[in-house]
Image (cartoon, rainbow, N blue to C red; front, side, top):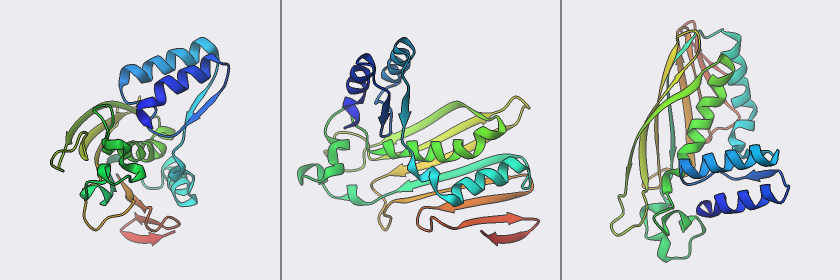
Length: 212
């Protein structure tokens, strides 16, 4: 459970282990910084899993962007939409319901998959995350913990370019199950990928649609 990550990771580091953990790293920024300090102090490494970035289509998108064939990125959008939270799952013993079992838990933690997908494409071009503005909401009456989030992220590189990324995530989206998708708009084209069709990459280059 995410609210235990900080304590478990820190204990493992202090015991001399490298750590592989599921996302998100911790619940709060202060805890994440504490894990970072513990890793530096112990000389151990902490890795967070984002397995969607290992799909061949996602990696190919990174290669195309790095090659410059679709120009300079300027805008991105990403979503991770699910509907299982539309019922009071925290009262039904559903595994994923740990997200709604306390003030330190958060349903839209799945938005971290979106940020890492966009960053995976942008970071080889020198872009780094500069700012985050997010609006978290609790839609289900009586629920402890948010179940929807919308966010705007700004990435910049040393060349003075900026990318605005718009994210939407949550468990209150009827008709959607594990619907992770991302799209990047560039000066000479665009790229789009969806977990619903994980081995397909859609691109627009020179006014033509390509499916790779």
